[in-house]
Structures are given as C-alpha cells and as structure tokens.
Image 1 (tube, rainbow, N blue to C red):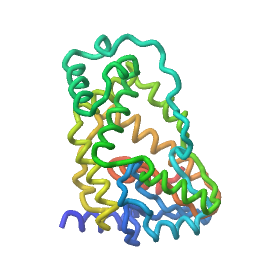
Image 2: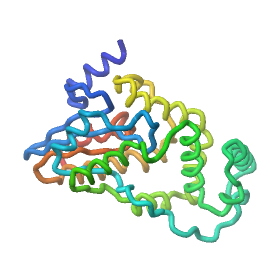
Image 3: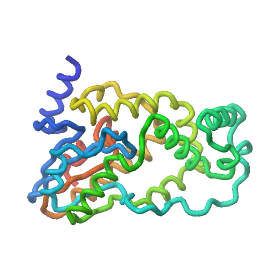
Length: 269
C-alpha cells in the first residue's frame, strides 16, 4: 500500500512517469521540445543485467544524444599518481584502521598497497571490491552498456562531469576524503543491501519496490556534496540543453529522495 501511495503522489506532482518501464526510469519534458528519459544507472552490474532491456535500446535508437555523468568507456585510470602521504595508521584512528585491516583481510586486498593512498581512494577501492564480491562487474554496469550502445548507434555522448572533474570533487573533500572512508566503514553492510536493492530494480521489473525504504549510506555533509550539489549542477546543465530527445543515465540514487534530480528539473532555472 505504501508503494502504491508513493507512486500515485509522485505522478500527481510530476516526479514519476505514467509509463511503466521494466527498470528504474522516468520521463520529463521541458518547454522548447526537450524530452529526457532519465535512467537510474548502476555503475557495476551482474551478468544477467546484460543485454539492456529492449525498451531502453529503443529509447537509445530514438535519442539525439546520450547524457552520462562521465564517459567511462576508455580504459585509462582517472586517479593519476598519488601524492606522498603519511601512512594510513597516522591519518585515521586506531579503531578505523583495524576495521580497514579486517576488510582488507576479508577481501584479499593488500593493506600495504592502500596505506599511501588518500582516504577517498581507499574508500572507492573497498567499495569496488565489495561490489565484485557480490558478483558485480564494470562491463555490466548500465552506463557502460549505454555507452557501448551509443557507439554502435553512432549517437553523441554528453558528459555532465567527466572522470577528471569527479576525481577533483573527491580531492576537495576535507582531510583527504576521510568522511567518505568513515561512511564506507560505518555503512559497510548497509551498502551491500543497497546494491542488492538497486540490482533488483533492474531484474524484477518492479523498479519502484523499496524506494521508500532505501537505507542511508552517507552522512548529511557528504550527502550534500555528493548528491545535492551535483544534482543542482546537473539540473542547470540539462535545463540548458537544446530541443531534442535525450537518454540521461545517472546513478540511481540521484532520481530519488530529498533534492532529487527530477524534482529539481521541474523547477524553473
């Protein structure tokens, strides 16, 4: 009943598409003949998430361009060379260090290889390895598959940020991104459940299920930087697009919750 109520309210205020898609997506049309098919992407996916749903590939064939957070189709690493940093055990407290040590042991990661990296990069590497342990792979991620589809169809690709800008954002986090590592450790098991929930949106043809019960995996300050502020920037970029039909693939969490991208796009620039 809660799910049906949320969907009904969402449609009344224009946050959900009246069209039901077998994956997390909604349609938004703005003045000036600008039509956006917003897709809730997962950056790593399972093998049974490939190929893409036929309804999504049809959307791609009709689109003037694919809009993504970043074009991740190249094999180049965006991280670059790490600066000389103090050992990790000197940058975080002993309890956190022991937690990282335990996770490295469980995941088969060399703690020594992480010790000189910034905290945000350690967090990303732990998260990526966790996802791999759950059976997720980058080549089955939705944005990667969409980029491959765009290349096959010779469609233009527009980046909202680009990999380098995303890395610069992480580099600006205080204390080398310690807050991201803190949240990764604190919400380790919750993040695994969240990944499984989002995968289910692509596999069970009921993408709205569980939207009202999404677990929190970011603290408020980090959520503001990684979600709210980016949504605001993306809103301005999308509202500035010329007339056309666009498929827009962003992380699924950007489509739901407070300050979500669809609700912002409905507001005037």
